[in-house]
Amino acid sequence: MSVNSPDELLLLFGARDQNLRTIKRIFNVEITHRRGQIRVSGAPHAVEKASSIFNKLLLLSRLKGKLTAVDVRDAISLEDKINSQVESDLRGRALSIEISHVGRRVHPKTSGQLNFIEMVRASDLSIAVGPAGTGKTFLAVATAIEALKSKLVRRIVLVRPAVEAGESLGYLPGDLKAKINPYLRPLLDALNDLLDFEQSRTLIEQELIEVAPLAYMRGRTLNDAFIILDEAQNATIAQMKMFLTRMGQRSKMVICGDTTQVDLPAGIKNGLSDAIQRLGGISGVSIIRLTKSDTVRHRLVQSIIEAYEYKDI
Image (cartoon, one colour):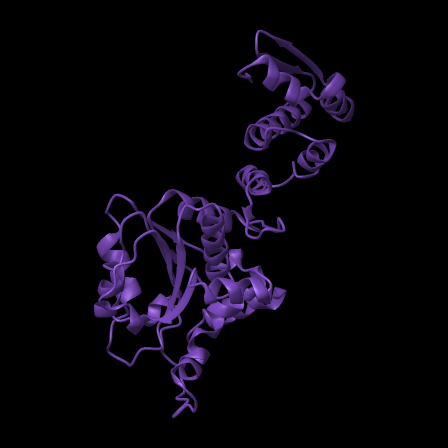
């Protein structure tokens, strides 16, 4: 294994070689270094484990810019996990979303969520498909707030189709705002989970955050905006085309949905599945598919999703 500089070697070995001594003691191996090359010797199994831990710590140190004794202990305790999952866990610990002035941070809890955050940050147009509880909406809103705080965008636009989930609510009393509020409630819930009530109300009053039904997007051009379409499986193909073409200069767009929960009338193809087929090969468009293993709601939700995957019951 090689390191890039003496500073990186110092970071990896720790102050007074504390990390080095810990790994040598636990795995009973000898560790030497010369000209940026680290050599581990001893019993083959112990060498393999110690080398694996060094690689993980090197990855973590490059991501965080530092290492602590807790990082070393965690890397050792995680050694029995699958290597790819461990690396994702370590990257996830280094990656977080800062979403408020008080310094609250949101951390991805699965490798899929980690990849989702990285995709949204890197792409102008991101599409995330996955079952309920995988954090699609929550993480998209959190990343949008981070972008607003960092002044990468001037406003956030949260959009949702006004489609009922399997039952008609009939006539709704009140003004227009009261009528559309039930459809937009999930987006407002995600917003309120991330910001306190006064923060979110102030941002909405200042029109820095807008929550609107999909039908309200026609005719608009959204510049300098972070735009999120939630429950996109309930948009028709025509609505999806209309929404996608609202994207203006210096804007970022995230589309979230679950193609197993379509509430459109029978015979109408949903715009989310259609968009994935049409846009998959376009440069600048990223698509991720989250799975039930990325579910972070109550522990029973993942089992419920699995139960409903069997259609012939």
